[in-house]
Image (cartoon, rainbow, N blue to C red; front, side):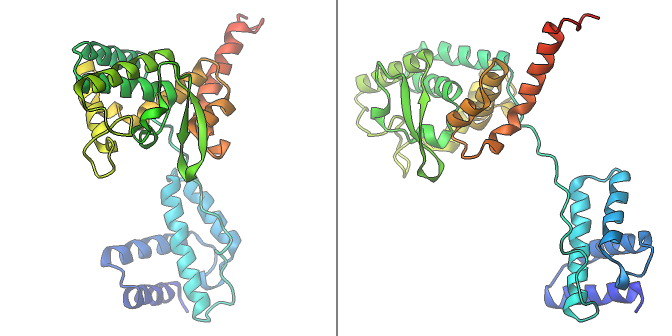
Length: 299
């Protein structure tokens, strides 16, 4: 059977049995016809080596990993159809791995940006208003600890006191960890809590109480507060979110010499591979170290 006839049968199956839309069917056709044109033999007799050669060709054509993965998905489904219908006795695409798209590095706030945010939050806190003091406490603590925003807002009131140097955090999967609390963050938190007590609203068991269903400040509300702070500090609002402060915490620690394992523990990552997205910072630091300190670097 010709390549065109096999592709037509496959597309008819997708339309009839899986209800694929016309645009999807057209995309499948383009992908399979492109593979057929590059293949040295008929599709019915093509093997794994033909598929790998085609994928290599796509890479040389400069296609993105996501596009290559989509083409491979179409080929896999096509040969699964041929195998299921008895046209072939195997699926040559079964054990071919999809290309991995490079994991994008998180957008990181610069240390200067963070300084502007903290300075602006501290200036606002000078008003003595509980809302301004709360914002200052939130920003200082997020940057000082690298906590997930969900971990921070759900902290119990008893987690922080005047002499607290470490806080117990319950993270994903119920895993507990100890995280250091710096002096500036502790001072901001205590000022905020004192304002709560003075206003008579210090009755919740949570550190950041609210009228939400959970009883504490929502992640969305914290995100809104961050955007407002960014505008006031002259930082692009799109550059700031609680999660981006967490990224800044990890990146800036590593840039100043922190150990990757220590950062992993503070972030609450179960696997070091999750933390390794930040190793680009270590690489830059090592390059600078060699350039600055190697005896031959000036030659």
